[in-house]
Amino acid sequence: MKKTMMLAAFLAASQAQAHVTLEQATGVADTYQKLTFRVGHGCDGSPTKSITVLLPESVIGTKPMQKAGWKIKTVEGKLSVPVEAHGRKITTAVREVTWTGGPLADEFFDEFTVQSKLPAEAGKLYFRVVQECVKGSMAWDEMPGEAGVKLKAPAPALDVLPADGAAHQH
Image (tube, rainbow, N blue to C red; front, top):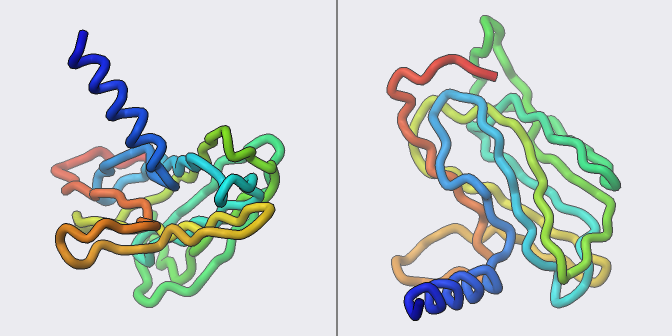
């Protein structure tokens, strides 16, 4: 019982520290994945009115999920290195997705979802996120540097695991 209470206290404290995070910790290389970005709070108590997710260069084929009460805008950009998908050469892809609406009150959380094709190579991906609030904004874009240095506004991260013969999917 005591361990359960300690675990509950730890989880509550870690959630209070939560910022914009990814629901998924891992994804499989060269597959389409559902990526859900969780917004845990507003900006210093101010409600969230938009979320923009900036996609890493190696992520393509992104389609955002609609949300009631929110409008979606995507921005396409040129890829520095074209990729092949379904027998076609892809030179541009969605580089950012913005949901505008709400507002999402500080005392609530919500999720914003896309489907994207992950790169063929395994490794860590970082998704920079900009949270605009009624008063102020926050850029969740810090990348790990020195070991042991705690980040104040970390970018959500995804560990891309080797495909190991994963089946083709959409």
